[in-house]
Image 1 (cartoon, rainbow, N blue to C red):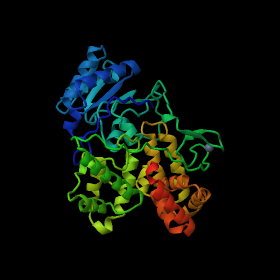
Image 2: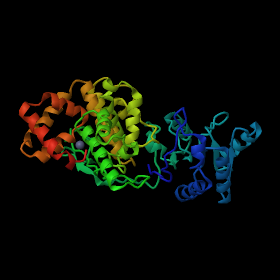
Image 3: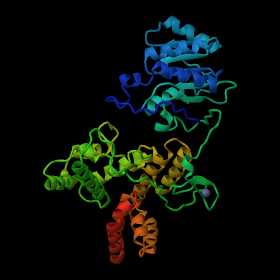
Image 4: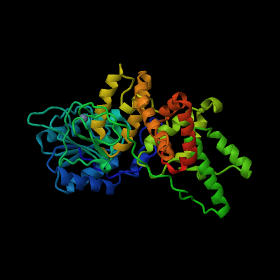
Length: 442
Ligand SMILES: [Zn+2]
């Protein structure tokens, strides 16, 4: 499925978790509608379509723009009368009207099966709504072989495919491997994502390789200009935050120690993106490993508000998706699997499904995180860790490689390694990390 990435703007959500009308209005503008029309004409100008909009005004404007390009279009909104609706539906069924634009989901009295394209001209964070909207185009109809989802707001890449039961085609078929970070499965020779642990095609276990992320920049652009003294203090603060994370030390102590040293509390914006690069392509993953690190410290701080505050210091105040995800949620399922082999199956499925999506790297790194935690859940983690320990053992005398191998292990692997490796290896790891932590990106 080709993605039409025309809007990448982050929107504030309302209390139900979906975007507010006001925030959508800023995105779904007349200019945006113009893009929708242009793309539609380019991609599938003859397809019978319904378009979902964020507001009455947008639905009206979009219908006008399609009509002006010679495509007979009508719009249906809440106060469209019953008789008017019936007329539109019957003209739509006969083909006299090619497109219906609408706000919300077309429900009552609408059961048209000949729809060949669903135009998503509004963003949503609700999978249920996405499924409802796309479902409108998935009803069988004589002679119809597919339905295109023309998604202008990256809803499908954010929320996942609305259905797994239908093959969905959107021409021209366009698949691009993300950043060419692929490796060959030595069993079936398929090219698979570099970070995949299991080959989606044959189920072969692949090695663990982590995709490298760039280092955080020294200082992100602050809203204020810092004098040399402040610059030094900010740098110290940022280093302390990163070091605390890497060494799994108390995050709360960073501020305390800063206060002792400099006799004032550091402005929280100094701490932003201390651990992770603000241009990271795997921000969802970063948030999940960071919130895990913070939650492990909850005993001593004992409230979730602190975790949120620390998350905001790192990732910024506008963030609203800072909840801890359960490991199975990385597989897009509501509860754990019955057993590990079902989890392995699901892993292959998710890799296969998302490997070419815009957010593949982020989704797959989170999947790996979920996979690690799932393995513990199924009490079958030991075998994999023995392999990891072998790797650590093999680079015991190369401190830089040892530190890298350790630091790039997942949080859970680290906890396990800390508890279970031999004393000499543990010591070698400690030394290597102490001497080289700042040379390695996590
Ligand atoms: Zn394979």
